[in-house]
Amino acid sequence: MDENDITAIVLAGGRGTRMGGVDKGLQLFNGRPLALQAKQRLASQVGRVIINANRNLDTYRTLGCDVYPDDDAEFAGPLSGFAVGLAHCQTPYLLTVPCDSPRFPIDLAHRLAINMQKDLAQDDYDIAMAAQGGWTQPVFCLIKRTLLSDLLEFMASGKRKIDAWTAQHKTVIVNFDAPHDDPLAFANVNTLSELSALQQQT
Image (cartoon, rainbow, N blue to C red; front, side, top):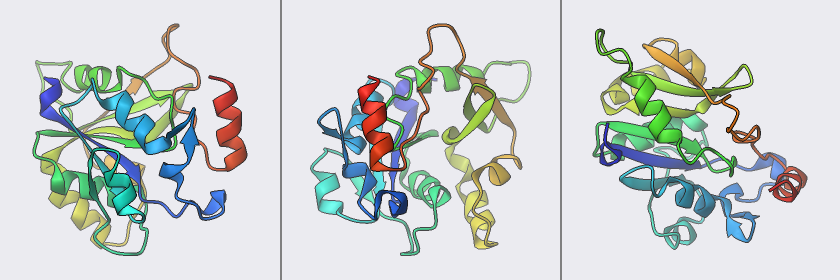
């Protein structure tokens, strides 16, 4: 799988409730907005980066990406971002990453892609999902674009949990537990104090 076969979407469409309602993707990490940090970590991994945001769209556009809001105004969660990404993806695969895990691996796309197509004797997987320390990371997925209609049908039934949707498809779990892997690669920040604490550990 070539990097140009992959579009990445930075998920920044949440309410930021636990941060006091601020727009999480625009909070600074090492002097840069979290969404920009994500974009820069993705730059060498994929052919195109887009952003899913529901507020401050013009500000997000200054980060140099196309920006797409959810199809509704209900802040329906990460799966809405997945659907936005698949709808605007012009490549065979979509990589999803949240804006609030600023240390995610710089080889994320490569390792997910390798495992997605690992067993050439069988049909390849529909989804590759990251995991670390025995915990899956459902917001870090590589997904076939062809799953859009299936996802929309799942969401139309009122369901919103990522792992409930991925469980319906052939999904490979890719572990990031090698000695060289950052143990905080998938640490996410939900409060301003967590953001400050993670920044101090860089």
